Length: 327
Image (cartoon, rainbow, N blue to C red; front, side, top):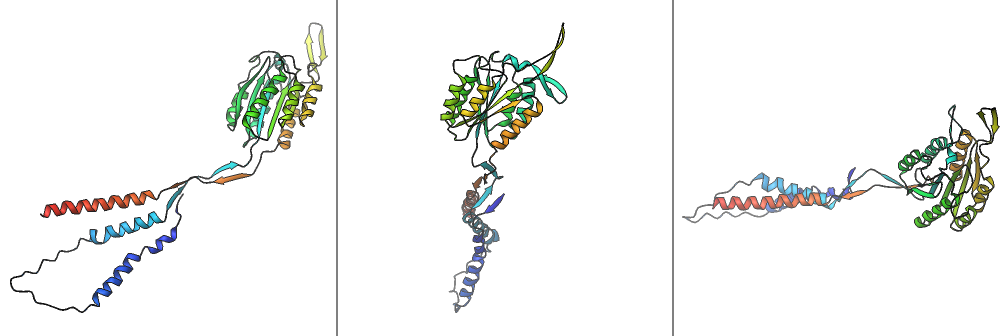
């Protein structure tokens, strides 16, 4: 949008006409004395004033001068910036057990990772204004996506995760340690880690509780999620039998991690549980709705000024060329 900062300047627009009128009246008030020309002298020929030079161009230059003083500004579309953002890292287990097909999803039974992808992508889409990062862990922990406001990239990276990408075991302690490193580097006071796993710490040199204690010292709140059904039917040569596919889930350690960091432990046994968990986290860590709005502006005062200078120089050049032609 285009506007002038000092629009009142254009009140001066008729000033040249007023000045011309007053000067003309003053000139007419003088007493005129006629003196006959001496014999032999010729009265100089009167030249008719060019209206372009005498009126239009001076008037145009005056308008451009006022436009420059009025400070024209172009305002771009408004930009909203969130006053406070939260740093949040999603840490996902990609160990071999995440292939277990024991989770219902829209009427079908799928593996645990497929369900996690579906729910987490919806969660990411609702976190506009926060910086999100993604850590994947199995034998070791790897930073898949650094903390970023680009939620689309985070969602894409979640969708592209695959079992076996980083091994088959579970390094919970390492994933927490890596999250601590990234949080400390970015120096944001609001730090949240959401750690999802279906097992126990079976890899890495860092104990989960030790890492959690260090996280607490750095102001990091950890929400832990244990995923996996309590019971499923497995068919074999000897018939069907009911088993607990989540027997390896270390709920005690996950609860302790959450307690140490003033977070919370959740248990997801199916699609509804996992959806409610992420929705509850959304409520516990709401997105800040306070935004600052500003409009980028470009000062355009140099445009009328440049045009005025160009016209003035053109007129001077034209008069000079005309004078040389007359000579």
